[in-house]
Image (cartoon, rainbow, N blue to C red; front, side):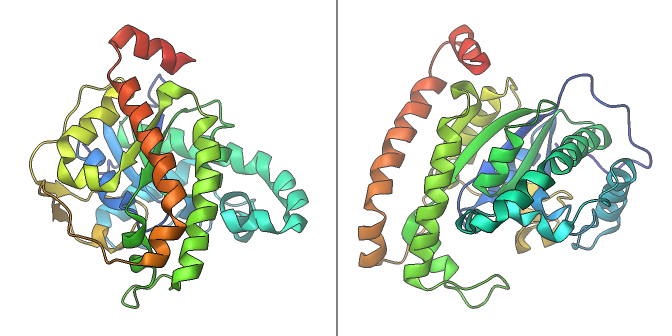
Length: 309
């Protein structure tokens, strides 16, 4: 479980931090999944760390404990010396559509990876937790993190009913950009193509496919399955969860606690257009889901051997 921010950071853990990266489309439930994981022993929910560099290491979310924690992290990792506005060229899927960005990405990558490695080490040391949850969700950020030697990366490919995602992307009562139905479906296609590519090239024992609806129906079981894959026997406690001190996330983290009750999620809004356009992904996800559950059911030694593959 996330610990109160210390006045001085403890010593660095001997082992490389285990980073649980929640990957997939926005509005798929990455924040609530991160909060749930962060309520388990030895796990720190760090939030959307893709915002750390652009914001100079200072969290935009108010709170003394949060401010103290992230200032301690920033004191160990200087975010200066990199063009913060260009970081998105390495992380955002849409940047791949502009061939002019290739040279900029190549020049930026060494410093970006150096800072990412130091950032995870600093968060692990300051929190005292070996397992860190990054809910940035961008597939191309996951691709960059695959290049790091200083972390043990686990990919959690999170998906939600596409009609629910499209409806959420069209909402007008949130500060994020609003998408029309066709634009939202195009976004899902690009995101899923890249996420699938990144996911399948990752070691089998360190990748998990997670459905948002399955998590809502039985949070404790899904959280336990995720943590077991990382070698942890920690489990989720009660229904009331502390949101912790993540760097950034959706508006959920502005409340100190959230209640998570197991049960069937509400039926999503129906859209024939979205259902037709996303049908191929339903078939793909069905196979990924079956493969992930099959791997999770293997005996411990065999599973551990695959994790090292």
